[in-house]
Image 1 (cartoon, protein in one colour):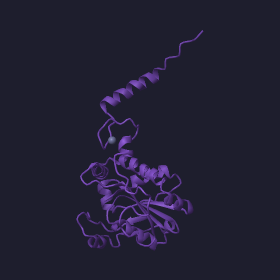
Image 2 (cartoon, protein in one colour):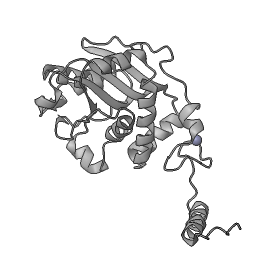
Image 3 (tube, helix red, strand yellow):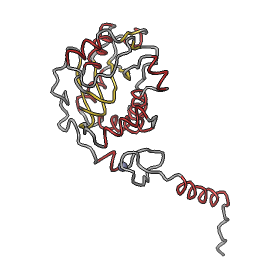
Image 4 (cartoon, protein in one colour):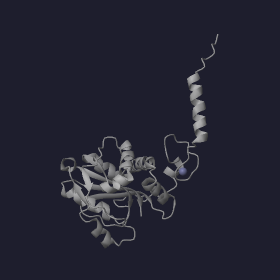
Amino acid sequence: MILPKRIDMKKIFQKIADGFARVVFPNVCACCGRENTQQQRQLCSFCLQDRFEDANPNNDRVSSDSLLPEGIVLQHALWKFDKGGNLQHLMHQLKYERLTSIGVDLGRKLGQRLKAHPLAVELLDQQEAIVLPVPLHYLKFRYRGFNQAFKLAQGFREVWKDLPICDIDDVVRIKNTSSQTGFSLEKRLENMDSAFKVKNTDIIEGRTVIIIDDVFTTGSTTFELSNTVQQAGAGPVMILTIAQA
Ligand SMILES: [Zn+2]
């Protein structure tokens, strides 16, 4: 005789509650606004996989036309920046509208993409590495309440599980620079000169440093940070960003 399955009331209530939550708080993609079937994610699979153009499709050492200063072994951006488009809007939401979980989604995507970059995999296999989200000046941090680059680093680390992330006090930004939009390269370099300081040399010394930021434009910020960590004894430096302006 086949016994009827016990009715699990808890499960039924959970399903009703989930359905109710979907109607009241629909899970929509922060980028395209379409319904998002990915649980716990801000971005739908289309926006994460197919919407934007790969900035480094041939897995080159640089995804821009910048000349890399000595010591920087890789500069890789995930996608090409689309001025006024969806990606710019996403970056804006991450930075100014406190949608910090977008950062974790994007950082995870960056980490997954890097697993398909042979040079990056080879470099990270050889030597101990540490992730360094570009530090914010403490005044900016206090005002914003978080560092968006740190959110990217958290997502990145979900893919590269053994990698430690620098603490907020290990490397600091000592110059509260203004926005560099519209500045010439010369002015940007001058603006960023001596902007960072390594406070915990032990954590940097001899390690490959993976600098993570949201957008790579001329490199004035990340090159200066790279210079600072190398003076503190860091090994090779990689610069990883979500967008390539
Ligand atoms: Zn979407």
